[in-house]
Length: 124
Image 1 (cartoon, rainbow, N blue to C red):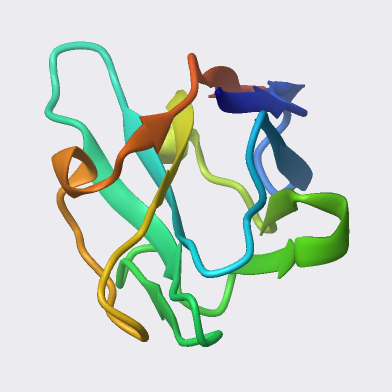
Image 2 (image 1 turned 180 degrees about the vertical axis):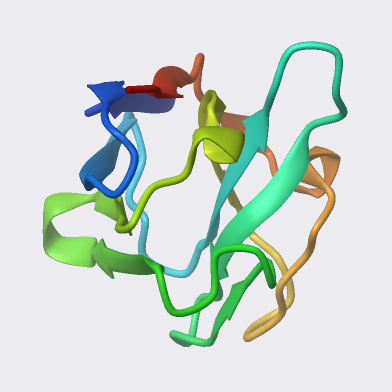
């Protein structure tokens, strides 16, 4: 069982991308989901989180530009990234975990499942 991300790529500044995260071998029902990113030489950091009851939190750097949502029947989560800036260039990872109902966690190690990631490059 695991997660598979897709949708990354090269985009110009100001553009948009939508990342997808599909489960393999389990249902997303009852799971908290997170999108994390890791740029070269930097720590992995939380970008956007959605709890099992639909609560959402974003890193301040992406608020009002990124949207996270889940389609539980399709066992897929999404991250729509708008008005992209070069500083968000990183490898983006999806995580899922059975956290206490309604809770969000900013440490990726708190989640039981994570994918291999998808590269996002924002460059002219």
